[in-house]
Image (cartoon, rainbow, N blue to C red; front, side, top):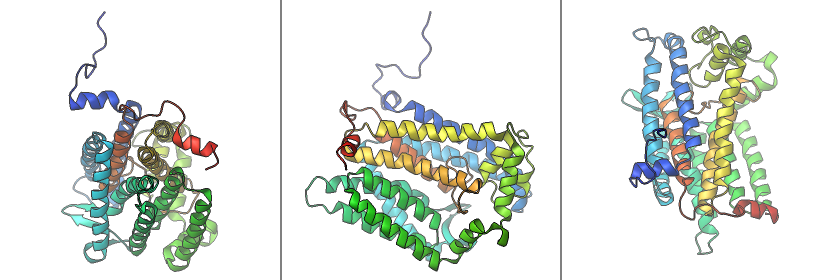
Length: 392
């Protein structure tokens, strides 16, 4: 009996064959499933989104654009996953510098949408530089932390914190508080995994609390969203109410593909609230399977990352997987009215080119860092686990 056909033979030494046999195919397949689901859900939500946006010439306007975004994302993810760890660092630094420059230019050339200046028009498309900053900065911060541990006089921790403050300042100007909180949270996790003494984590937590209070006091729309969450009977909660109704209407198995009705009245249904659209049409079972895909990617990726021997590779890969997982948790929590609303997309599912490219770059970097290489994985105890066992 002939053995099943395989895309590449073990003896094939080409670049693509080597990539196939060394990449984490489980994570790769799960990400591909998410992208396919994102495109499929986009076709279901596009007619209502096009009507709400006044686009009458093509009801699938957003769906066809999502197909283009998915193709671009797949290209970016594949290209990034081919990189060596050194290549990941180089591309991350270049991406970080380029994105920070564009964020600095936003007040001059950016488009103001709903009171926020976060996008730059590039022909018929919009570019949100902060989406590319996230994975690039996580890799850069992990690199700086690892360099500071070598005792060669490189002030890596100082450089990482100064860069973080620059990013926070640029996000505050836009303003984009959701991205700020996400970046700070993942940065704190990477900071911890890098082996920094726990007392410094306490200092950072205190600074985060002070910063959060300052944001609440100075950014009106943050106070408004917190008020809507804490006192829903005294505020306009139309958006989240419609999303909750959509989720409840889906029941166990949903109304059926394309049969959802709440999406006609849910604002931003194809972006921030695509989860509610999916829950209405495909039900609780599908929603749990979707969450399970994210959990699988994060848990499998973290398990693989924490076995890496090199401190930079370990903290960078773990931080990237946490970035994906935390963003997904925030989006779902907003849809379920567990936290105040914020403009956070559901990775690979929500409509958006910048979000797709940014998350594709995130997973491309993570796949590159966790590829099987000679000496990459510690055969014994993970360095991080060893530090935790010794009390930090």
